[in-house]
Length: 236
Ligand code: IPE
Ligand code: IPE
Ligand code: MG
Image 1 (cartoon, protein in one colour):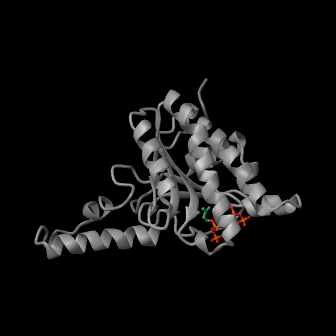
Image 2 (cartoon, protein in one colour):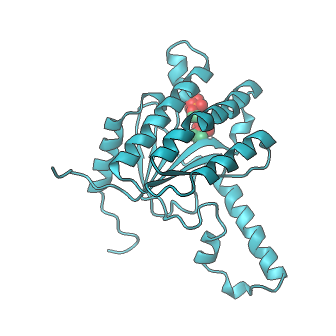
Image 3 (cartoon, helix red, strand yellow):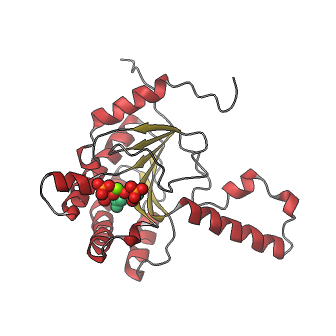
């Protein structure tokens, strides 16, 4: 059976709309996050089964610290729960989990859990699954620029040696291809600081579906639309 869509090598997802999903049901926002986490588990499985090589999801931005303390601490605990409950699945299914983002501001326990699961799944060959947590594209670029400035100061590099490849290699996503397709749920048309450098030529797909309602069908719709797009990369 031939599919009427192609599978992008790298899919990014901005998982948005958990709060609105809960509100619609008269529930506290955190219920939306909990449901969203379950949907993430299913989405990872779906992408792996479809043969996606790289999946990167936006789970917590550098700006999300502005939210009420109780919501932030729920999200941090949810990440811990996710790590504990997914380790077996990821190992069994050869999915390598990586975290992209800054570790600054996270507590020691979470940082150590992140490192342990990254290490335990590092031989996964089926899919690289990255969770952008405490991630901000501007922060990522700023950190990269600092590293490059240091190399210049240390005389390891001349300013004229700075090129796009060097910059890409300072980012959390080094060694990953740029995302081909970025899906955002809940109908918002903005990047909210997700993969700014890497998304220069990504195709965007905006779905009105709120993240906890996301399904394989919505994903397939996005793949069909993506497959019909004409990516020119500045050419003709
Ligand atoms: C996305 O859902 C999850 C995070 C940003 C952590 P939101 O919490 O942003 O949900 P809405 O946008 O308020 O509906
Ligand atoms: C983007 O969603 C961040 C994540 C999905 C983790 P937000 O809900 O934080 O973005 P804005 O505030 O609508 O731009
Ligand atoms: Mg939101």
